[in-house]
Image (cartoon, rainbow, N blue to C red; front, side, top):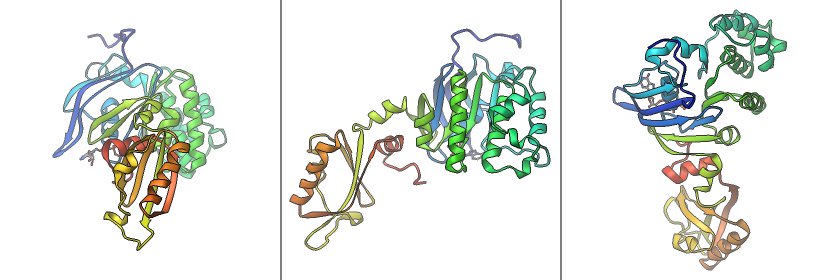
Length: 327
Ligand SMILES: Nc1ncnc2c1ncn2[C@@H]1O[C@H](COP(=O)(O)OP(=O)(O)OP(=O)(O)O)[C@@H](O)[C@H]1O
């Protein structure tokens, strides 16, 4: 096959079928199917060890899968590695730059790897590094280093951009700055595939997300549809104890019959984790007074009570019974 073959016009930006990768006994990626269309911002979410980085490194051509089909822009790594390197941008989880080089020198070096691309000047502007152009990389803050990594990923004007945990370790302001940059890249119509374990990041940036656990995709949809799949828009959490003697059940929680709670109109589900009752609820204003009266009728009083809008974190909990940060 010629190395200048063009992708078919309908080719998805990314196409994975039955991709598997094991490291000795550990199956990091376990039969993954995935399709990402052009112009999409797609998120791979999941707890530590779910297989996100391995998946993205297989897509980037850095790790060979044991089996399965991997196509980017209609091309695959075994026949079109050079062309793919020219057309994709990578931001790895940790990029080791030369600390002694300046921002501008680093970008000139990266620009030299690509036949075509944007100017070094434009990449500095896009990443808002104008004031740091002559600074040595070793003197940059964490957020500035991440923006430099992003600028290096962009300097070849990629059609497809891979970002592995782009905001991990950044302070809230640096995260928001990076989100703004990603918004601009989305508006330019680039396809972006990112991994994150920040659910708010995925909700804010991604058109669709795949939730991974133990090397598999356990849910895939738009963030609003995934959140709607939990059943209720709101999550009510409470801990209760007996008014008489503080008697508690397992995990220190007062024994509340779950059937009484799930019988309440608008309560979609109930879960008890580490003494905290968690209810998925359609409408707070109708359900909460009824929850209070059930507790009162059982002689229980509240120790803790809070509500929040359902998030992707709640989707993960509903699907696995675990919190994303448990492990
Ligand atoms: N080179 C390797 N050698 C051995 N085991 C590996 C290697 N790379 C990954 N693994 C294992 O494969 C599993 C998936 O790891 P991976 O890094 O892909 O997960 P992740 O979802 O990206 O996690 P994190 O959010 O912590 O980066 C883990 O159990 C990990 O320990």
